Length: 593
Image 1: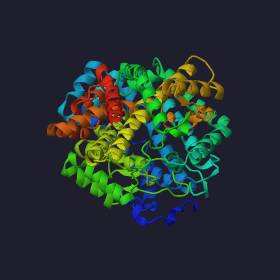
Image 2: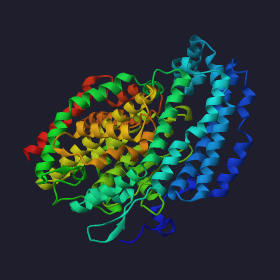
Image 3: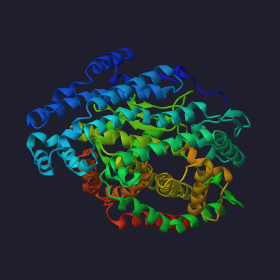
């Protein structure tokens, strides 16, 4: 198979059009220079925030400035991800990061000055009509008041942020450019260089030797670089501990959840419910082993379809049509938005040399959302289209119906819309397909969605909780203890019917979300919520209306309260138990086939 195409060899219709952000790099540079000159403008308001009129003016001007900063960041980030080896866009990204950090440092007086006000004063401001755009902002300030430091201390923390982001950036370069991935023999016997996108494709293939070669090739590459990636990850965890202690939070977990207005009980309830449900996952693993006729079910056997004589492999355009049909239950306005995304170049479709791996959606308030894919003709990538467009539509609705101050929804709810789309697509395919083979395939796919999203992401959540707890308690994070703990978790989660290949102990080293602490559990809470919401959507038209209210709500209140609008109450343990029950019921349905 030929080497990956260069960026310039990809057809234009399959590349995103960044012109809704900036016409070209020169336009970006021009706005950057204008903002750089004005980075200290908030200092004009220093010492004057007791005057409510001046305070409101400062908040609005800050919003205007931040919208432009956001657009600069998104453009540079997207261009950088088109080819991570292109130093020009890496430089632009570093420039705007630096400007943002300098602006944050310059405006570091703002929060301390506001939080000198009493809770009563802040509450009065939050209830004034002219401050309606900022009501939740002030309610959040009341909550966070005790963790906001002096002006001088806030400035120091703001100045440190650029350095702190270096661990994530270092991992991205390491993972996308420097990782020494080998060539392996593909199913045709041809030599092909392993990549992140191809790895996923290989593991879903029929040829077991190719799966084994891809698995060992991927994780042995991380093993060779384990000292490097351990140093990067350890530095990132130490950074988290530093900011936690600097502000006086009880723990890194406490800091992460408190800042998102989420009770820690949500995290513990998730872990408890999933651990309680592990026996069902173990039974499913035993079933897979039996259905695949294997003496040993290796880690590289977990992704290949059990139903070998059925597969969903669609060209990109057909996959888009399928996604649109499946999501039509969400109404004509939603479908029209999907058409715009597909036809107006919101999406960067195919892998090219140097392109960032994986998939994501990103957006700036002043432009439509964008989606990055690395599309291959696999079932997983068809569902990825639905997933990332869920993010994009959530961003679109929030930006349309909320002011800038409340448009950016928190990470906690970020995975809900994406997962609702996946569940709706899955339910549509189960309804559409009549053959036993197809139903078996999609039921298995649904179960694997639970395995990879609810169970696996919770396993990741246990790992990073332990890593941060170790660092908080003064236990060194070495490659040995990180690998040992991860390997033990893998055994606990997948059970005795899986052969736990020794290479799986290195898997923690390839998880990019670990560089945004306590992100991964939100995939699990996202699926938990999405299953509940999707069931309501398919049964009740009013549920669609409620769901769109949720999509349009941005961050107008706490994320747990927002999810209640859509019909998912994560404050109740029963919601998590119900997700496990859906997994068990789906498995029973599969066995009854």
